[in-house]
Length: 310
Image 1 (tube, rainbow, N blue to C red):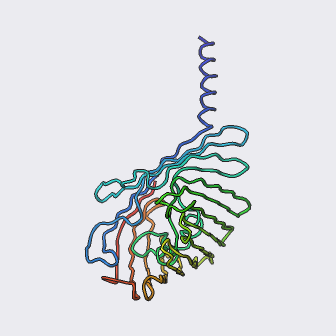
Image 2: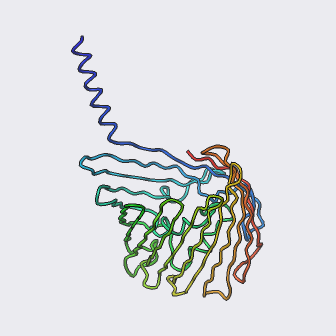
């Protein structure tokens, strides 16, 4: 009997060690807002933030080498409909070690992930989002499919390179799409620079952005310039501020976009207050107004919503 108990204890110890070598995290976001989109007269329930259910994990292979994976599903909580591409967020697998992190599959473009999305005080969420006007001009893309990426992080510096197959979803059919990005984040300072070229020769963009946390507020600024696959030049810039007020944050920003395909500019101002009910749940209210020759339809939008992260 004692031998059996001892054997079970030893097996249990080995099982615990094996399970400790790998982990899987389930996470998600549920976001619904009521309001009216810019350029629309319809009032409805919306999900600008992109509700999601994701899985990511890591397995320790020994010798400092780890296997990683991640996949993220997107859906509309207001009607329960799934995105047509089920793993629309990303779907990737990789190896990580002292050499850095190599991943393959579908993923965010490193310029978007490491620079463009870091500057908008609204993070691309709500009707007040500014990154689409100020940072995603020219040939910028949010994701690449059938891609390989490399990341290296050291002493606050983050470097990344990415190459994707010549698919229509990556910008064209003339060649490989690729992107390069670097940022530095330490204490209150963040600064980043990115370049990307879609798989069409004319499809390219450079982006720069910075932000600084002064304590009473975090100020951010960014600019972008590039050319789309049709050879049309585009440029943009934005400035923003995030100010802690009570248990929430007051957000404000202005973005300006200029596309040579249309005479004139597209300007947008966003204002909002996001109140944290807990570390995972917040309620928010936002207002946006657009102007310029490229602005069509109603010029204002607004939303009132709730978001829960897990």
